Every structure is written in structure tokens, then in C-alpha cells.
Length: 84
Image (cartoon, rainbow, N blue to C red; front, side, top):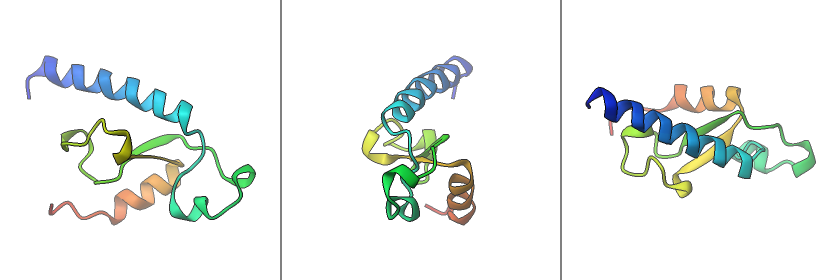
């Protein structure tokens, strides 16, 4: 990927990420969704559900995103297999 394309991609992702967190301020992992909303922790990161990140075809699709706490995002990422 060309350097300018990479920078454009990062800028676009940052805009999408900020907007998603504004619309989804609480953690959306299965564990947290089972808890009453007032007790759910604040999300700090946006995760690509498909695990492909910005390289995936659904990189900016809101249906492929979920707001997570840093700990929950780290746990999910550590458990992902990158042999897609």
C-alpha cells in the first residue's frame, strides 16, 4: 500500500472509530451485554468483529464493529487466529 493511501486509511479509520465510540459508549462484548446497562464499563476501543482490521473488506462497515474495553479487546485479539 502506498504511503499516502495508508495515511488516508488511518485518518478515515480514526473518524469512523470516534463516531462509533460516540454512538456506542459502553462495552459490547457478550459478557458485558449480559449486564444491566448502568453497570457496563465504558468502551475505549473499536474492534473489527471479523478480525481482519483495516485490511478486511468490511473495515468500515458498522455491522463489523463493536465497542470494547481495552482489556476485552486485548483478550479477543489474543485469542484470534490469523489463518483466514
